[in-house]
Length: 494
Ligand SMILES: *Cc1c(COP(=O)(O)O)cnc(C)c1O
Image (cartoon, rainbow, N blue to C red):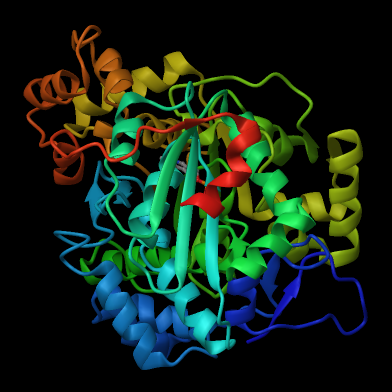
């Protein structure tokens, strides 16, 4: 299995191994790495997967994409990443909401958000890639985060061989719970600091470090090189394909569907990584009839799917589903590559860069709409979904999952489609407790974090996830705040 750049238009595109793609992150021409061909799931594969546990399914599917990795090593890594210690009670359980809709709970890991599904295994994949490619230097990972990614990356990379990491979060931009989760982080190879300013200040600071040749030289002399952990890296995307296939197997096993039945998949979307993983599962042959792309008020993707025009030149909305507050969905580039090839992709990306928008040719547009439907929810609708679902279905969802569920219901109302649906549930409701409490009418406005979690638990009869309960009592290790101009000093001092 070889990997190519989404923007490589040469007759024989430069191909790299999975290990190289994971080590490099971004292709040299600025494109994203993508498998040159998608492996197919045979009837035999599906039969074999049915009887396996989650970590075994993960190892089986990862081996199809990462064929340069030793399969025993992958199996061992998956056992560690998805075992009982990190995912008590199972890595990706399905919860039946009603007759047709199933919530795929991806938040039972160490940070209570779905980023754990990728970030528990990706550091192991990177660590092995460094060894496989004979890399002797330390990879120094830099992360700018608006909340969930930073904590999940810290938990994934802590104490991993050959890797160090610094996380920068905006002093004014994360929730009290997210701040507390990062400030109490353990691990001898990680460092966390706030940055004066907002998320853009933190993000531009990190981008500046990546683009600085002199700093790269200085790092080289000091024995390390800079690397990143976000979803432009194939190593973060490939583990996400697994849970869609696993969910399908679980539905067959429980008798809720027959093998071969088509299902719907609905994903609350930001950077388009999670839903693209579902698309790849479909390309592998998993019977997914339709993918529903759910957005909040930052509905650039809904418009794109409905009109074929991607236009990021619009107002940015701060919503109660902040992990979906995104106007440039980087992984869309991988979908464009699959739909219309590298030359058209390179042109569309150039247009996005220079004009902030692009529009799809008619035939590509038709291919897109054959598979995807797009819907969005405003804040009032999102709060109503949280309330209705708790009252009618006795099921508590977070703000992001609520956007997904509301969009799925709009799709059903509009089309009358009654096929079974798997909804990606991306965070524990306790991670966004303030907005969940407000949506349910639980009085908790003046509470601190502890009070908020307790109020939600008491009013709903649900349990506070152990990883969130534990940060309330953990010692704070990191209290630094740096000016954006001083961010570049961090990797040399910590
Ligand atoms: C990151 C995130 C998303 C968006 O996922 P993408 O892969 O970026 O589309 C949705 N919900 C939550 C809770 C997240 O943390």
